[in-house]
Length: 440
Image (cartoon, rainbow, N blue to C red; front, top):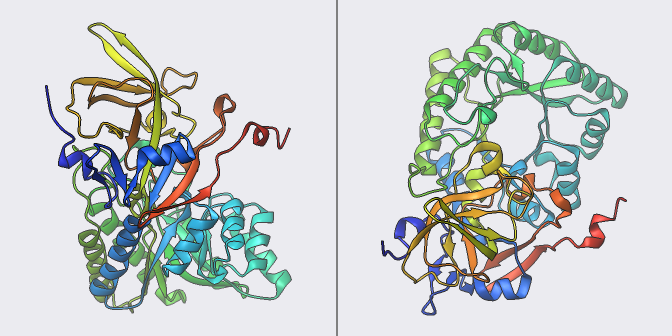
């Protein structure tokens, strides 16, 4: 069993990844071993070039395949900080936020509020007030109680609020049960089968302080087939056609995001352009068939924009070899910075960043340092002989790792850097023990 780092494994890393003559992994012409010495580990590295490429893929695919106005919006729940919000704004994307905290960071970054969509199934009154007073472009209404509160707040301000209604289309996406969000039995959106969606639309259309601009649905994430998205488009367009006579003018349509990415070499390819083209054709054809004017089409990717741009870098602390069973490599991070393997059973791979040209010799399991048996980052990964002090680089770590990170076991959260053309910029500093006492 002697192999080098395979092209398939390296292809999971950001587009600037290469193996240097010293056998080290490089990102954006930077030796990750040197980055570890400068910034410490665990360390999250985001490659700007990869984000730019994937952003352009969405923008160019929409522009070339959809024959009307369109827009890409970044789903901030994948990962957000001030620097990333500013990057998204400069790239010309809109921003999808799901909490007052995400909205606050976006506003702090100077993100244009008119280009923000505020999602969420239980927005508080304080969050709605923050959004209205900031001039957020779209409030995505999730239930009748929220619609009533929003109407009251808008009436106080004597100004109509542009909204989308989030509908639950009862479309089953083939993904983990926790990532399915478009079924009838879901906490998200207005159910269509029981008439709630139609009641909400009629109520909004009759309210002088509510401007029903469009419809939205999101059926799940980490999806590799276009069928669920196309089925969702058909359901939304049927709904718009049914309520057209009652005054519903479908000006905007958002079938959400959720396109998948490859985490391991065995995952299927997930090119962006064919997915966008297929969805665009479905919207255009569906509107023609129903006699509807083409709405502005908004896609809201998160994972597929930033996931492949991120690499998590860990230092190995120790080995535990159980003869005939398993060899564990313990690293200085784990479920506090990446809960996904424990929560979803998500699979990852890794390479030894300071021995990337060494032949693979053993199968190992990467264990985190936290007090849970389920704190395993990757199982049965084929690697060179690894010793304490070696660096493990885990690709496709740019989405939902840090967004769902915690201080479990009172662990400070990692530093985050953005790399581009041989330079590294710290965009989130490492937490300190003093930070752990900030609210105490």
